[in-house]
Image (cartoon, rainbow, N blue to C red; front, side, top):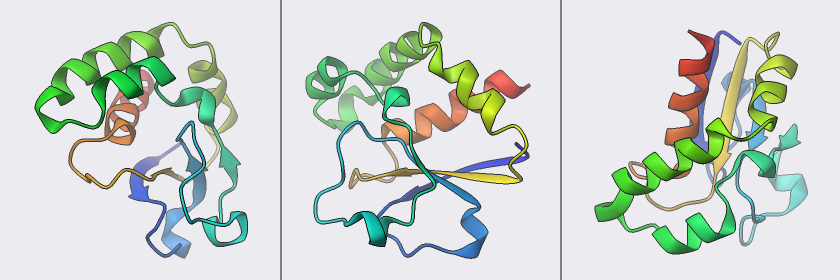
Length: 118
């Protein structure tokens, strides 16, 4: 996998997205499966429901959330499967539905996966 990027699922799909992976545990509100243009739904890589609900997308607690999420990812066997399966992809776009583009789980996941590739 040469490039890993993040994008809100509500943004229009682009050829530059490459392989599009939805990384939310819940299906995005108002988004149809046809309009989503996803190649895979990797809900097993999303934060646990307890972690997501506890954080409640509060930017003030993002650092704490990110730390707990990374701990979950350390214990998640699906991470290695994801990296192995998509290693041949030229570009992978992690799609998320959260409104905050600067404090969301997809950013943590992108950084985590990138660190696993180094």
